Structure formats: C-alpha cells, structure tokens
Length: 293
Ligand SMILES: Nc1nc2c(ncn2[C@@H]2O[C@H](COP(=O)(O)OP(=O)(O)OP(=O)(O)O)[C@@H](O)[C@H]2O)c(=O)[nH]1
Ligand SMILES: [Mg+2]
Ligand SMILES: [Zn+2]
Image (cartoon, rainbow, N blue to C red):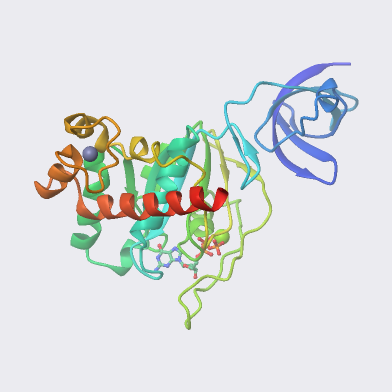
C-alpha cells in the first residue's frame, strides 16, 4: 500500500481529512505518535498510508513549526489581523495585542484594515501609515468595492494563514470574496451593540486555488497574553533600536530616567497610541503575574 504526504485540513470525531496530491483522504490516526500522546492537529503535515483511493490512516506527524491552542492549529505561517475602520470601531490596544500574540508565536502578522468604504481615504491612510512605518505588511480592503482584495490574495499565496480579529469586522466576508467556491456564513452587525453575532465556529483549513490555505476563526472579545513583563518590549518592533538608548538595560519604559523609548515618543519617532498600547498591555501582564502568586 502506498504512503503519501498531505496536510490535515479538518478533524471530526477521530477522523482527519488530509489534503494530498490525490485530493482529500479520510484518515484515522494509527501511528506511533499516539503512544507519545501527540494528537494530530489541523495544519499538521502527515505521512499517510492509503487503504483505498479516499481512505487511509496517519502514520506519522512531521515536526511542527508552531502550535496554537486557540484555535487549535499547527504550522501557521502568518496571521491576517483584521480590523474594520468603522463598524465596529477599531480598538488599537486590541490590534497591538494581537500583533504581540502573533510575534510571540513566531507567526508573521499581516494587518488588514477592512470596510474602508465606510470612511475617508485620509483616515484609512493615517492609520495604515503608522503600521507600515514600523515595517508591517498592511492591506486596506473593502468587500463591497473589492479594493485591496488582489493585494490580500498576493499575501495569502502559498502560505498557511489564519484570520484573526474581533467579531463583525468582516473576516468571513473577506475569505468569501477571495474565492467564489468558498461560502462561509457571515453575519449582520447587530444594530444595538455594533458587535457581530459570532458566526464562525469549526476549525478548517480552506484550500486556495492559487496556492495556500486559510483558516477562518470566530471573533473574540477577550484574549490573554501569556508572556513575561520583561519580554513584552521585544514584541514592539519599533522599540528595538531605540531602547538601546535607555540608561538601564532592564528599562521597561514606564518612568525610568533616561529612557530612549519615552524620548522617542516625545520626539514623535514612536507613535503615541502604540506606546499607550504597550503601557496598557504591560499593566495587564503585571496583573496576571501578581495573581499567579
Ligand atoms: N461596509 C462593509 N461591510 C462589510 C465589509 N466586509 C464585511 N462587511 C459586513 O460586516 C458584517 C460582518 O461580517 P462577517 O464577515 O460575518 O464578520 P466576521 O469577522 O467573520 O465576524 P465573526 O464570524 O462573528 O467573527 C456583515 O454584515 C458583512 O456584510 C466591507 O468591506 N464593507
Ligand atoms: Mg466570521
Ligand atoms: Zn526605556
């Protein structure tokens, strides 16, 4: 019987659906990795043994590049961090928090500002320039006018990407607009709260015609950062150079004397909102550490 390689795109009740050169193969897990207590994850590259054209079993899981808990997925290359320019209003602290989460998991962030049809180009540009200047990939999109969709496709090509962001920002709508055979459920933004109605649930990698996979995720309201307070500063990319100017190498850039980061904020070299996000997240991380003892 033939052994082939593929990627797990979906798992339900002990069955794993593996995308291979011969199409999707339904597999059970039977390999020695079961003894090691490793559970196959969506995104895992696996060796499978075919027992028929469309059925087989997983023999081996190849080493993972990374592994996320929520959503449970392995080998993610990049996070498409989606926020809307309006409806719902953008939350900059949450945006910066998701960037930190991605960076700390070795996942490249790509920032996608959606619903640009709802605001002036000026407001959109002002926002995206802040992140472009730091060195992030940024794409401004509208599902309505199709602006930016080709650029988004360019970023998705040949990569495993997951879409993250609050509910109602248009993650599922964006994925639908990328490829006509994908028809994810999308929801109306609730008029009362301007909050979406969590329309996305299952963990499934969707295969793109032009190469690559995407994973839709449900929007969230709360996210916890599991990093040490001393490490947070390293995930704000634009601080890296400037914090060498701090008097103390242990400087957390809060109120220490001769702080290169605070100076840079005052000189306009670091965006003030980004610095406020840093302070807010630092407080959050400190609180969390305190509760641990
Ligand atoms: N004006 C405008 N509306 C959009 C755009 N993209 C999505 N929407 C609308 O925003 C609402 C929410 O879209 P969804 O795609 O369901 O949002 P989501 O991020 O997947 O939400 P969850 O699955 O709840 O996390 C829907 O009513 C969409 O039609 C856009 O570019 N412009
Ligand atoms: Mg959705
Ligand atoms: Zn400092």
